[in-house]
Length: 247
Image 1 (cartoon, helix red, strand yellow):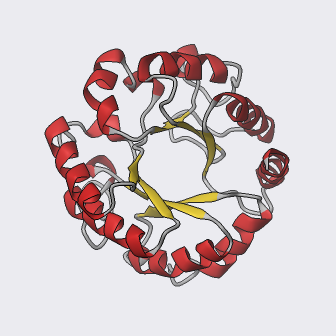
Image 2 (cartoon, rainbow, N blue to C red):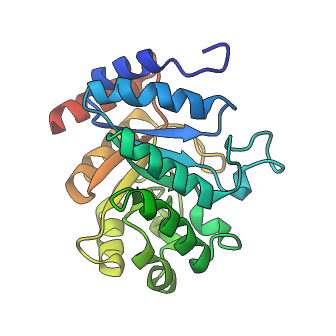
């Protein structure tokens, strides 16, 4: 909204219209996001919507950018604890994520991640952690060190096996297959589809978004849309149609 607050009721109505069953709530757009999350969760629960929370890492946070994730800023151990505590009273809050995780391993050492997850699981052992990890960073050494710590990964597809672009949807299945070989067949992989333009790779088309969603529904364990399309965007109807067909 114009005042920077999230239109929680409108967002829930839109998610229902899109046939979504989950929403990834980003805490970074305003200092009031934490407050808005508390408003959003019960409204989402009334419609059977599960909720993730995504935080930005140091590389996307103040002082490099204008905003911190408020109120706990770069204290990800505190975030882990507080989100898990909230999940015990808001049962549809099921997971959390950190964007661009592999680019921030200076902070997110395996010891620090264990500290985060110890704090989270002390409050709710079932509260899942699925960081955002890219194909090129999900190497065998990375998977060996970090894979056992995660409950799954949020995997943004951008055809990195084909040189990186938002035009070629044909490698979705092959990239998922490779990641399953590295992570294990039972390891949850949620594919993130670029509906919004990428800073370096440019914009995607509605046709591309449809192709990636269709391929992801066949090969991944879930599909996330980055970001929520507006009603006047042709991609909105693409998402609505395919999510409706997959129910």
